Amino acid sequence: MDERSRQHHHTHTHDHDHTHPRPPGRRLTLCLAGIALLLAFGFTTPAATEQARPEAEAADRAPEAMSELAPWAGHWKGQGWIRMGPGEPVKIDSEEWIESRLDGAALVIEGKHHAQADGRRVHHALALLSWDEAAGTFRFRTHVAGRGPGDFTGHVEDGAFVWGGPMGDPEGAGRMRYTIRIEDGTWHEVGDFSRDGETWNRFFEMTLKKVG
Image (cartoon, rainbow, N blue to C red):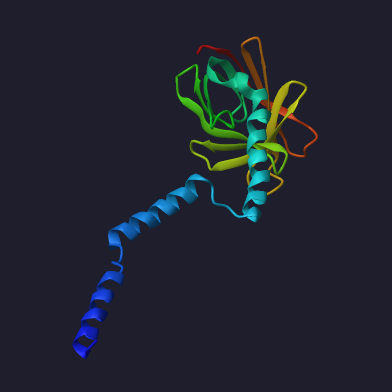
């Protein structure tokens, strides 16, 4: 084989062995498909799985703890009274709207109270009630019109829900305590105040009926 024949043979062989690279678009498609598979089948490390398990178990227990408060959900209306300061307490018309959220893990509560005498608003509050697994207690987070937010704890005691805590800052301003009892479609709630945590004075009471 002469020199020209060898060069022709080498070029012909190279042309047959050449592999054409995949187009960039095809490589991107394959990469995205791989990511999608990882997400679909839950790509996690063993350590992440172990960490997620207790959190998932805690989340599962939240609706179970909140199930005791399931009868709260609904629209409630009634009357009561509230002591705003010295003198006679103010008679009020009260309404509460309560919705269960996050598959029963939380309750959203809105309460409105107006003076019967002149219709003026005396109290308007929004609250989020949920179970805190780490603390082993209920958390009652409130927002009151005209005042700042509050973060309180609650527990079930003798069939009633009791919640409250310190009233603002500084410490020594006193504590408040609300007791809610629901029986036979009737909501009865009282509020008490104490400066020393031992002697309690009632400042609020209402009785509601479920209307929706």
